[in-house]
Length: 417
Image (cartoon, rainbow, N blue to C red; front, side, top):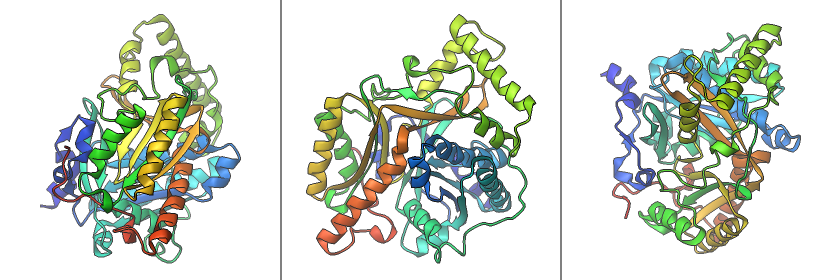
């Protein structure tokens, strides 16, 4: 029984139509024995103001990379949040996860000068507090998946992580952890320039007032009112496109990347190794030649598919490349729906998107790329979201239904219209 619970995520059937995130009946409850590995950059707003949001993104992806490398790439569901990450894991991985999280926290401090708070929170404790976590597995391409999350448990886990008193029982603090394995972690691509004019980082959550069909209605509304079709198999608004992918001979964040990958050092060998990989990719892309396991045309195509620019963790999160007219129409639509009490949202705009990568196997096409808006992206969208949530709570003189644990959850019978 325990062995099968450990393989819960591996055994989940996958779906490939993003509209399926609105099918509330298809989500499976995470076993009570599992844990949420939660990580968050302290004072991330200050780092953003100092122009260090790429470093913040890198630490979030490093958390995911370290845990996947330690416990198994296909066994763990994960969600990248811009200034942090959430990863679910079976109880058998508790000690290994604690060591990996502590190791990344040390690297964040020593290699990037950032403080990372980390915790392991039992799913059973979140359920005892009235929250829930249920999952679906969205297939980006063969063998590459993103977790889609229903229930307000992840939001509650984040709240506990940041609360000094509530989080104390779960927080991890190892003063001398081992260096985590960050194999496959990289960030060699330049910021992705908006092809259409604006990169919008959006997080939006329907309320109980929107009813069980709220998410399906929201996605139709985004398409009908702003021309943003999050349901399409390959949305035109995806920021990772062949023409937006650029790589400099010397990556902008080379020093931080090498320090993270080597446990804090800047020795010449890993620097030269990184520069050699960059040169190889640049040449292969220019020439079109296959170099060993690197097939440039295939890899570039896979990169466009294997990104997390759209995801759902009880909140729809999008990082999209839109025209100015689309951005204005999007804001007008969201403002109307917010005023009606049907949703809460947060939004930021930039001229570029950022991308950080986790490549576990070039030859097998096993790689996932984490996308965020520049200059604060999802982190500042979350702050904007919380301000609107607080204003709506005050206007109603009571919390939104379910907001004791972060907001509205799916009705068990909800499904796409």
